[in-house]
Amino acid sequence: MNEQLLTLVVTILLALLVVVPYWIMIRRRSRKHKANKELSASLGHGKPVAQHPRINERLCIGCGACTIVCPEKALGLIDGVAHLIHPAQCVGHGICAETCPVSAITIVLDPGLSTADLPLLDKNFESQVSRIYVIGELGGMALIRNAVAQGKQVADTIADQPPQALASPDVCDLIIVGAGPAGLSAALRAMERGLKFVLIEKESSPGGTILNYPRQKLVLTAPLKIPFYGWLKKRELTKEELLKIWKDILDKTGVPVLAGKTLTGVRRQGDVLVAETADGTQIPGRNVVLALGRRAHPRKLGVPGEVSSKVTYQLLDAGQYKNSRVLVVGAGDSAIEAAIGLSLQKGTIVSLANRSDGFPKAKPQNRDRILQAAVQQRVRLFYNAEVADIRPAEVILKTLQGRETIANDYVIVLAGGELPTALLEKIGITFHEKPKASVS
Image 1: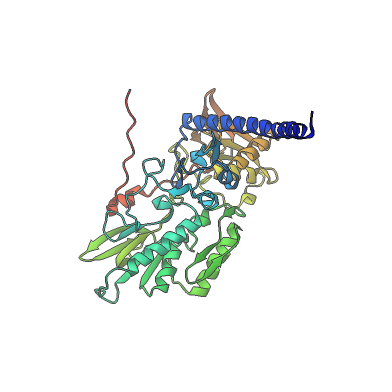
Image 2 (image 1 turned 60 degrees about the vertical axis):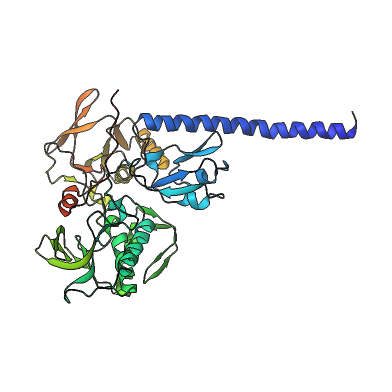
C-alpha cells in the first residue's frame, strides 16, 4: 500500500471515528426531543403561555445555538431544525432570537396559540376602547425588559398624538395604573417627553410583580435602559437588589406615585377618561395605560376553609414558618421554589400538592431540585392531588387513591394568577376568542 493510499485510509477511518458517533448522538437527541414535544402536547402543555419564538425552518441551519442559551430548555433540535419542544416552559425572553446567526427566530405573541386570555390590542397596545392601553403581563408579555420596552412605546405613542389643549389644568395626558416595570417605564418616558401624567399603585410601594417574589428569588434579565435613569447591566438580580434599584430610580428621577390607590373603573366623560379608585378618588385624563400585571389576582381553590387566616397566596419569608407544618399548592416554578425554601427551615415539615403527575411547566433545574428534595425526604410530594377541605389543624386532599388527611398549620397557594376580568370587562375591554375544540 503506497503512502498516499495509506494516508487516505487513515483519514477516512479517523473521520468515521468522529462523524459516526456524532451522527448517532444527534439522532438520539432528535428522537428524544421529538418524544418530549409529543409528550408536552399529550399532557396539554403543547402551547406557549404568551410570547414565544417562531422558527423559520427554511432559514434554520440547525446549529443549536438557540437550544444552548435557552435557560428554560424549551428548545431542541429535531431532524436538524430547532423546535419549541416544551412550549409551556417558554417565557419569551428572546435570547434565542438574539443568538441565532441566521435570524431564523422571531419572538411573537400569537393569541391563537397562547394558553393565556389576552385582550384585543393593536400594534401600539391600544385596546378596542379608544385611548385605553394595556401593557406588561396583563397584555401577555412577561419579563422586565419587555415591560420596560412597552412602557416606553406607549408613552411615545401618546406623545406623538396630534396636539390638543387639555380641557382643564386637572386633566393629564395619561393616567398610568400600576407602578411595576411597565408602568414605571411609561411614567419615566412621559417625563422625558414632557407629558403630564398621574401614576397610581394599589400597593403601599412600587414594584408590581416583583413585590410578590420570595425573598432572594433571582430575577433573570438582560441589560436594558431605563428611561430618564440609565442602564441596568447585571443579568442576575435578587428581589432585594431590584427593589433597591426601583427605589433609587424613584429617588433620582422624582417620579410621583400615588400609592394605595386601587382602580375600580374607568368612565368616559365627553373627551376625557376618568379613572375611579376604591377610596373615591377620580382622576381625569386623555389616555389610560393599564399596567396591572396578573399576579396581583391569585387563583383561588374554592374549597371550604380557604378564607382561614392560615391560608396565603404568596411566600415572602420562608423563615417565618420555622417549626411548622406547611402545605404548598401548585406545580410551577413559584410553588417548587417555595417548597424548597421552606424545607431548608429548621423544624419545618413541607408537603407539595400537585394536580398533575409531574412538573411539565417548571424549569428543568427546578424539577430536578424538587425531586431531589423528595428523595431526601425534605418535601413530601402528592401527585394528582387536589385540596378538598382546609381545617384548623389539618388539610384533606383528594387523590387517585382516595382522601388523605395531613396535619397542617399553614397553606400557601401558588397556583398562578388570574386576569382582573371583571374590571376589564367593566371598562369595556374585549379578549381574543379561543379556538373551539373540534367535536369528533
